[in-house]
Each structure stands twice: as structure tokens, then as C-alpha cells.
Length: 286
Image (cartoon, rainbow, N blue to C red; front, top):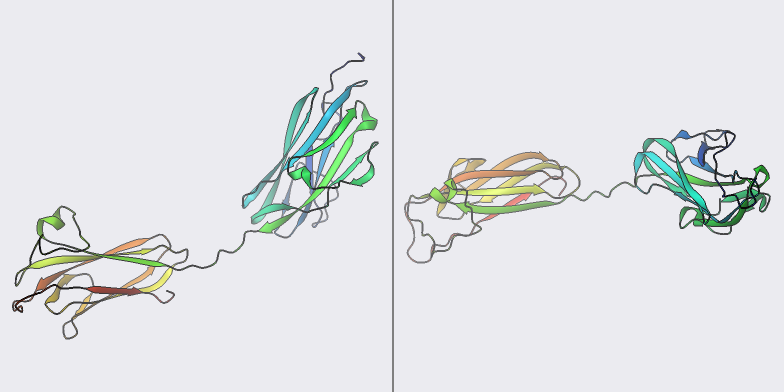
């Protein structure tokens, strides 16, 4: 064997994979390349570092583990091993969860076993899942194998706080403007003055911008004095000049458009005949 031989990691037939896992909550005693877990279970991961080349020394050996940060039912945990004078290697293990969750490293659980560090040296920081830890020099041959273990716990996805929210927008149009899809928040007298008996249209956009279903959504539009409902969505009560509609449930992110036709009364007062109109939309949970 050459005295200046280049170190190589974990390529002996007797080597374990770079990273393995076992579910200690469920009583697993042997490390495997994958496991299953429930929310609340604690897992222990095992890292295997073996310089296979006798009479060589791997310098500035660094090892790091990476936990997936997202909530999912399948969690892949990766490990990365490098040295200044050796080729880097990596590996991964999979934890399949019964429900969406993520793995959270348990502080203070990193243990190192080797001739240098002894039997179960508690690593003084949690860098194994951050920037990694530096093991210094690792000589070649079986007596100098370094084994590292650490724990992670399965955390449930936090329940999202219910935030019902409803947005409405009422618009108006008429004639060819409506036919061409042009709707307005208001129509000024410089654009159009409606005479007795003329028709125009309201439409109301109702959108659920919250994160829960809005239940039993209702609409109430009390028309101004010189307008009355003639057709379209909703039900009309002539005495109160009230248009009402039951929109049912609206799922988060969905929107509805309610449209109806109104007509100007035949007898109008002299002077300012501006008709302002307010619509109210509500639900059982907003």
C-alpha cells in the first residue's frame, strides 16, 4: 500500500450505507434504509464514515445531514460527507408518514462513536443538521470508523387558523356596453342619463378570499326609490323594493356572479335623480 494513498469513503463490501434510520418509538432495533412513522414518533438516524484506504488520512472531514423542511407524507433525509483530499459522497434515507408532517431535529442528541471520540461522545452543538460538523482527520482502516447518530421527531402540520373572508363588488352596465362586457362601478351623468322606463343591469361579484367555506351566503339589495327589479337572479319584494338571493355555500377561493335587470320608473322627480345603491352580502360564519 502506498504511503501517500488517496482516501476513499464507504466503498468496502462490509460498509453500511452513509445514512440509515430506525423508529425507536415503535421499538425498531435495527437501522434500515427506510422506515414508517406516525406523528409524534421519535426516529434515530445513523451515519457511517469509513476511510477504506490503509495508510491514508482523510483530512478536514466534514459530515452534514439535511432534514426536509416541508410538511409531507414522505420525508427524505440526506447526508453529505467530504474531505479535503477525498471524493465527496452522499446518501439518503426515507421516512414514510401516516399523515403529513415534518421532521424536527432534537437538540443535544448527536452522539459520536470512534477510537478518537470514544463510546458515545455527546457532540457539543447541533451543527449536524446545520452547516455540518468537522471530524478533523480520519485514518484509513476499520478501527477508525466513525459512527454518528442523532434523533428527530415527527411534528404534525399545524392547524391553520380559520379565517373566513368575503369580498363583494357591485357593478352596473346597459345596452351595448353590457353586450360588449363593459361594466362600471358607477355611471356619471356625463356618460349616460337614464330616462323613464329605461333598462339597465347590475351584477354583483361575490368572492371567498378566506381559507374556509362560507356557509349559507345571502344577498340583500334594497333598490333606490326610482328603480325596480324586472328579472334575473334573486327574488323581488315590491313593497320594500328589496332583491334577495340565497347563494348557498361558497368554497375558499371560489367566486360567484349574480346579475339582474332593473328598470327606471315612469314618473321621476325634477332635479337631481342620482340613484345610489348598496348591496349587503353575509353568511352564517362571516
